Image (cartoon, rainbow, N blue to C red):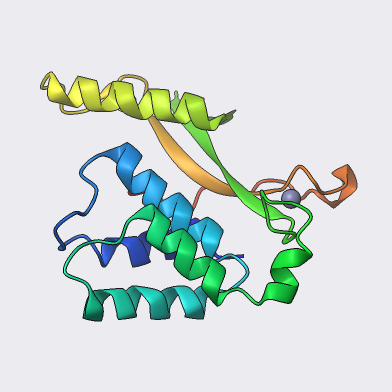
Length: 170
Ligand SMILES: [Zn+2]
């Protein structure tokens, strides 16, 4: 399992290159590709691909480059045995939560990826209108990403969700 935060840090290393995605959707696509494609190959292979790319490319890689590189770096035997393509049999994945703080109490609601995309879109629109807080400012809301057990795991194996550690930064 390569966690999202690690992938975000790696993604940011491309941020000075031409072709780095300018939109939230574009960065998310590349991030998804890096996280998904290298999940079996591992962090070290991902880091090496990022470094090779920085050395050999003039532009930010595309999602298809990440998928291709991840596939090439994955041992064929492992790839053939995958049963769950959400968590790649690690049992762990991540989900976005809308965290609301009201009167000092914090509640978290799990979002589908479509709901999260929609909120980010509204947030950008609010910022474009000059509302510096964006939509998250109104109710002191923010989107966090938490690790969660994958749906392929038996219910009893699913652990309680830990508190948020860090705001997501994509
Ligand atoms: Zn799974």
